[in-house]
Length: 282
Image (tube, rainbow, N blue to C red; front, side, top):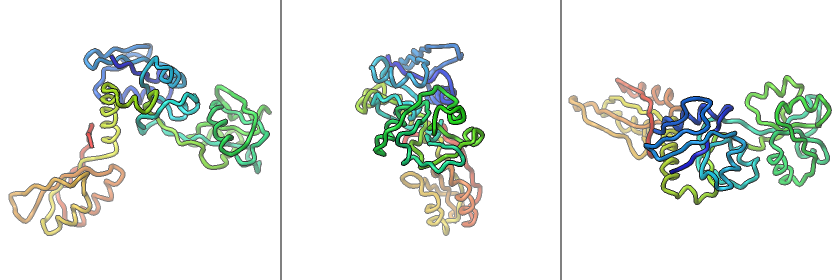
């Protein structure tokens, strides 16, 4: 039986559960559940603190889990990232007082407050710097005002909380994070049960980036239309009862769909339909 760790709370939890359910697994039904059994798929889910999941996976207690890339790297366990999932995106960055001229390359000897001490330590090492890291469990943005730190390092989404605390973001992002599937090492993805789990999730993740576009187009414009919607390998083309027209069907990037619609309409395409894709294998 494959045992999988999922986040029990926080911003990653709900989306992770929804993704696993969309992949065909019977998952958590109640927030109080700590364990959920899916006998049809021979899988058992364990709901753990996202920060603890890399520890369980690294130790071999559980073979695979979903957590944030930032938490996996901050754990300093060396777990392998098997699949990025496209949600829970954030950026790990430094911030200093609004009127400060400090930059990350000048942090040597200063005090840096963070809930991710190992991420900070790893970045300082890359910069060839040494600094005092003040570990806090949360609300790091207030640490400068309270006088326990000179700068902070934290996960940022909008940056509004830092601004409200009188801070400004400095330097390039240290890490771009999102939800990921982790294993003890890269080879763990080859295990049949884990490979099946990854392929199911990958099918959902890829499908979220694509739509199916179907339309009728004059044969005189067919070649140009196929350039607009080339599909994955090539579009599906079918004849219509009117020999002057053809039906085309192709997958297209969701973000490009409105530009594609404009281009197809300009070529004289009719009956253009865009539908969501639940899952796919490419």
